[in-house]
Image 1 (cartoon, one colour):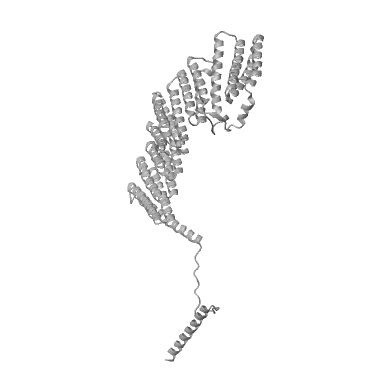
Image 2: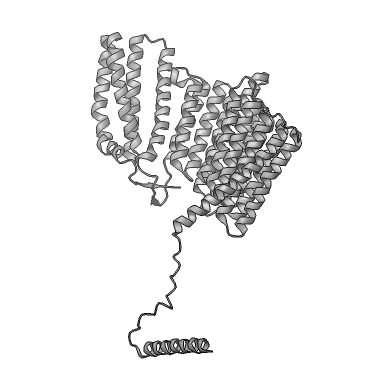
Length: 556
């Protein structure tokens, strides 16, 4: 009884002490230290965030090791004969696909890191299994390996797309491409495995590029290089491979244009590379078969007409179409020019190339004159070589080509219209025009010399004719320069005088006679006095030091 009373008294004393502490707290006084009977609990200290993150990574790494252990269990059962090769491989692929599904579920639950480990270990198991089953175990044919690669990569990319796992998409595309290359080298089954590269390229071109555009470069580079190598092997690839590459590359740019989307650098680069590789493959196959290049040239002409139609009808309907118009116009002219080179002989080829140069100049007056006029200069050079105008041969085709090149240069001179200032104007824009003018002048000089040679003149007299031709060209251009604000007239006139002086000093003086040298020196000296007065070179040549400076020009 007494012990109970003593315990009760102690509880009452404690309660009184607690009440006194509460009263002091409410009154704002200092709180006394608590007695030893009631120690304050120590607050729990959370572990550092870095330690938690490392712990998570270690946990996921351990789980991945367990998953790899499961994969090796399947392999051990297969190697031990418990499972035959076919079912063992199928079970392993299914095991890897299961972890892709689990990666998707983890990502849906917000566990991105866990999903990443699941996806990485699934890719490691799946692609390694396909490679080993096809090469070492011989449990898969090349066709089965190709189908498995497509199916497994498709599932992986679907998970990456739905869960926005960009790095998983990169892993899938790179691993699929690498395994395909290794299988190509090991098995030689080119048709089936190149089909995998085509599927991979199409998936990245038309689907994954919407979210990850840089991903397209990997399969595109692999596909182009594999087919390019197939052009130079002893047994080239089937024609269907090259046709498929050309169709895929053209469909890439056409799909973007039809969808009113601007072409990007990748689209243009792949279209050009794909068409070049396809044409090279077609020419190799035609050479081996001995059938001629007619079929390849016909396909190029058809594609050129399609490009021209898109440039003229589809692209102008868009608000921002300058670069797209340049691509399609240049592609059309390039294909047509190459096809003409394959189908025609020298004279006809030169006339057609000169015609294309004129067309390129006229088209360039609408958009991108610098690029298209440069293409016209290249075509004009090809026409001059093809007709023999640069080698002293004069034919009817050469005369026609000369006339077309003169018209092409005239096309670079804008017709009267309200003056505008553009970023393309200046010396840079006049360089391709100068190239066209120079080609026309050289061809004209060769015509004059050929006519003199036809009259039976001796070498000394022919030397004088060359000097007179150079002087005549310089004088005509200088006279035109007085009326026409075009610096290339001065450039070419000065170049004509320089070349005439070199010819006079190195060719005519050693082999000439006094009478012919008298004529040449008098004519050339007079030209040196007159031409700089008609076309002062200082202002026009100073433009070359600032080629991008805008100039006021007229546009039609």
